[in-house]
Image 1 (cartoon, chains in turn blue, yellow):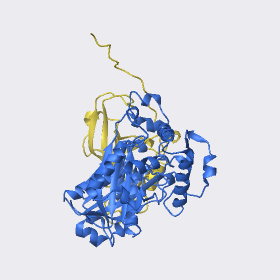
Image 2 (image 1 turned 45 degrees about the vertical axis):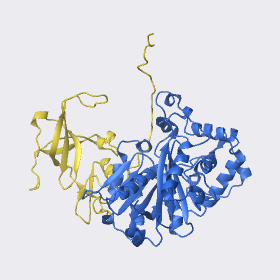
Image 3 (image 1 turned 90 degrees about the vertical axis):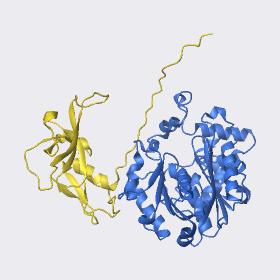
Image 4 (image 1 turned 180 degrees about the vertical axis):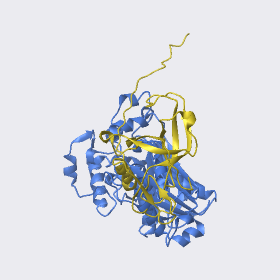
Length: 357
Length: 158
């Protein structure tokens, strides 16, 4: 395995709705910041990988617009995934492992505000014959998953409120957060339900933002960052598409991804100081803590997605936030998790450390 | 034992509504169209003139310059004749879709070429925009109804 590290991370503030900027205009300042932090020009980048989804944009090949901020002429080596940009990160990491180059830039754009009504959009990711015609609203499957967890005694409504209170308080220190505050658990428990046992604050607030992560290999990484965040292991696994075929109260795919990433990394999730989890709903935190086998880790010190979910940039932000803590010297080992699909269907785990293998 | 008759159709209508965010750059162009103006912008780095223009040059990544107006005439760069019908079609085939190089711009605009039989259209043909009436003007390409041949000569680079 080649030593590969995150050498810089930048993100735009997560806004409830950015009506002023097109994709390129959202991305360009973030891209500049990410490159400048590593002392790089765009000509130094060997490979660009990005993630976004047309279902959030309402047009085909929407990501092409973002290439106006990359500078795709003369032609560059470039790839895109139609999913969370954490998977673009996985592709860039694999590309560097192949030895094709030394520097890769990963970006994610998520614009959750463009659909007029996410209840129209989210059923499109479900089985088109047996589930989509039922038109479950955007939070319906998450409600089923949360209810299954509460029923199994794996969490409680009070615990969910505690998760939300902790995340929103942590987000007060995160300038990119869309939402933050210091509500009491009692205040949160007094709010009405949106999909029992979930209340509005248990659902991450969707918004618009871009994120950039720069990866570099070996000596290049050492030159570009004082304290690179070495990517020690990456893996992703997927559960079956039909939610009725899954036990929603646990996540076999997250568990397997963590186990395989730990094999690559030489350390496990239990040894991470920090974990950034792609929790689109509060109940997914206790579920993932168990599935991933987290131990002492501080969870979502950025506030996590419960403080802002910029659609398909959300998972990449988790990797960036985890790496940032290693680069800043406040963590030695970190875990980042990303997800796609309903009720944690597809899970990615990335283990990072202050030392290469 | 025979199998039951297979289900071959199922109605499951999808309706999805979106907000389009044109951005700062394209908004300049679209607002110009609503006033029958073709607003282009030049990159200060590579001199490329964009129509429509993004806010940043996609080659140099520099902010492009102030908008300036072009008269909208141009020449056909390439074209094709649409011969087949499809749902939602506005014009009856055959009709011409062309890439048009607007005088003064380095990028090409896509539009229809009408008021001439398709067999008369050729690459290099000078064309001019036909704008819609005041009541139909909008921040949209539909403010130009179509292009048609015209009688003027462009510069040496036509």
